Image (cartoon, rainbow, N blue to C red; front, top):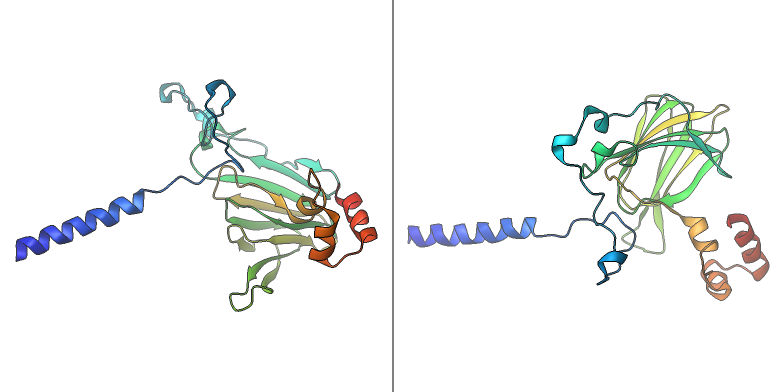
Length: 224
């Protein structure tokens, strides 16, 4: 009886362990369409790997995060990204970093990162940050989690949830954004809805947001 119990337990344990590791890797691309032509295909996931014997310390090094990055037109924020494109050693490690400098009274609009949790650290300035969580009791509503953040404060946006940043101070706010993905993705909610190509039909927007055609035209112009 004891041997039978041992074998049964071992079989169940082996099944559970194999199931735990038998999963698909999270994609690092927004879409991945199957193709039979190898000449018309791309490598998934991440990037091709260098021969380990040829790797150097510089592959795992980046300098310049102390300097403001390039401004994103129309948003009042300058960003500098540390990812696999400028630090090749990050490939497959599941991490990336962004420095953001947000002008006073400017906002990073409602957006989401479909492949990453985001953690923010405030270095300078004062920022109002928040994210929305669907209400399980009423899917027509959501709950807002928000805080006023000052230098030294840390806040986290759970993976995939809609969130925003607003510089409520009177000077530039400098923040560091950490992602647990080498390609977290970015979906700006207003731009995705009102500046898609091809555009979402006006009737869909009018009924979905209870807008008239003039308001829709104004929003398309604003976010295009």
